[in-house]
Image (cartoon, rainbow, N blue to C red; front, side, top):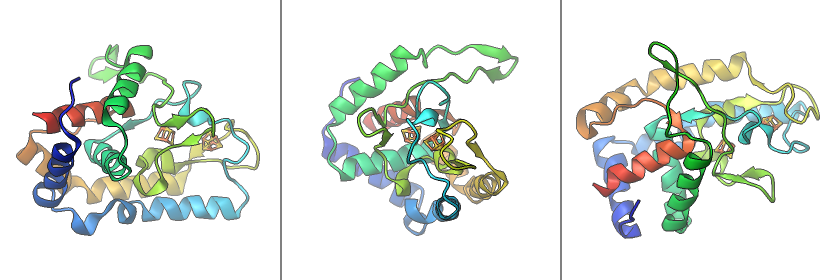
Length: 205
Ligand code: SF4
Ligand code: SF4
């Protein structure tokens, strides 16, 4: 994918969030508050990811899919940190190619197979996510260890995580309607690299 100047992408994303989606009161951190409280609670119970090689971010068990709004949050973060967008696009495209995320397989009518992949935003050296919690996909925040030092073997989205995700979906119905109406975005969920690449294509046009 060819790239447009960073400033132009930044302006388009601002337009999308501030004017089209009218999001100022719905900043990324506020939307994630309930999920972060759950993470905090787990940490207090000594359930954290400290000893894990990042099982839920690698092809071992990652098949995370995100909405366009979550892709917008990721891109807002990347732009704020002045990431090299050309490199980012290359990395995203490499992930899509390596794990055949552009090749859909139907499991049954109307339902596609969710493919596992190692996330583009997983740092192989620090074994951590490059996206801070305020901007991280909701599903990633909701997926937590349930016991100490299980290295990802028993992690899950527990009842409180599922409830927080459900509440988020309900509160975002209006935004998704606006995305459909004003931006012609069908807010279906996609693997993280596909969703971010789709967004980059959208703001380029
Ligand atoms: S966004 Fe971060 S937490 Fe989520 S799968 Fe990718 S690396 Fe893991
Ligand atoms: S949530 Fe579980 S699998 Fe994911 S990094 Fe933490 S301990 Fe590992």
